[in-house]
Amino acid sequence: MAYLNDRVLDNGLTVLDTEANRLDICSSEPTTYGQATTDGAVSLGNKTSLSIGVPSDRTPTGRKVTVAAITDGTVTDTNTATHWAITDTGNSRLLATGALASSQVVTDGNTFTLAAFDIGIPDPA
Image 1 (cartoon, rainbow, N blue to C red):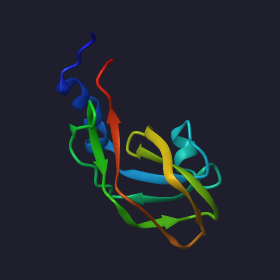
Image 2: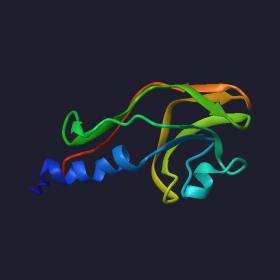
Image 3: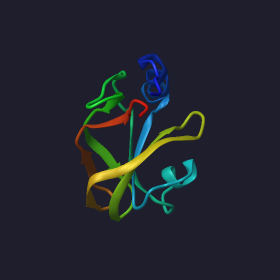
Image 4: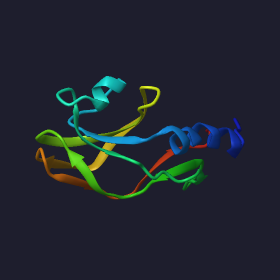
């Protein structure tokens, strides 16, 4: 059976805690930094100054970080948000993407909210 120490998993997740500084809501799952952060590509709005926790145990196995709830994201385009993207704007890196728990119709000029959510890495099988 394969094994990875928690430290190995934590170092992968620590990038989110230490380098991620922007979350975008998107109309589809972006595959590049430009798509994730550019209005008119797939970005519909963003929140800077993210709060992402340190790695901790994930259920049933592995490690995770928790992205804190967002109550004041800025909507910059009108459409239906289906995904999120987390980026490192200082290095123009797309770090993580995922589907929203439920799609959300957003309107330019409004604010968006997201509940807290986890990003995790399972233990090897």
